[in-house]
Image (tube, rainbow, N blue to C red; front, side, top):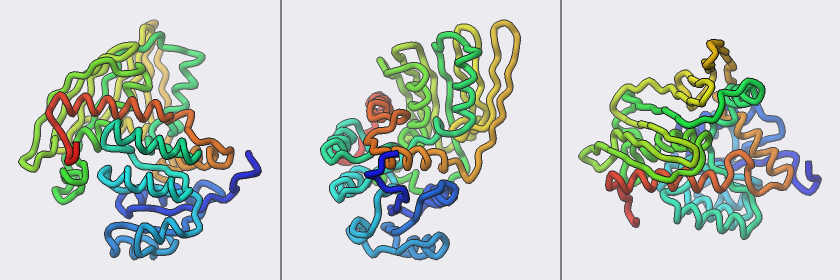
Length: 327
């Protein structure tokens, strides 16, 4: 730990939706953290949030940035990620920003440019690699490998979201690719490397939202077949195939708790590692350790990985003709 950096991390939260509540499930489980201030575009949400979790309800974003905080957690929809991230970085705050960190690669690069100039930590909130199960099977593969991985199959489609949910808002950068497909992009790149080519098909709603997308991709080390949707009931598991075996991450793979490894020689390994406190506590702990050690980039969710994930979605959106305002 670097003695120049704080032992207690003081947080400001931007946005009070479902993921912010899940963040607050995890924050108390990580020692040395304090919720200081909260702001949302919906004032009534701020009031109820602070009544439940504490912290000061701020009247506007500038008031939150002026409060005594070290870091901000941006829990809004992607339409505002770049603006809030850049303003927070310019105010001297470390930033943990929900996925996807930006609408497209060019906008992400503009955020990272500021983070680099200010020498502050910026990390995209991509939770799966921090879960105990994900780490456990990666450790297991070091002693009992499945060979060279060459194929990933994964997907999620959720049919029970209210039609009023912001995921269905074109203006807020909703839709299946941006809200769900970013997870699949992570899994494919984490196991197969950078994307070389993407082929995508997508079905749109009358409001211009991609309701269901199927995309397959060629990577440095193999191929992926992925899907994401907002109106069909998908299974939500994942398959990772190597030359000597395969891994099934059972549903829901993005909140991983159970995996089965099948080997070519017939032996099977079952891994069961439940998570606690909603699961974001592991990501929070990692982020706080980085701050305390004076790091400006995560070695797990690197800036290069964030670039690769949004670049993959950029390619998929080009394939189906999905553009957002200003692009």
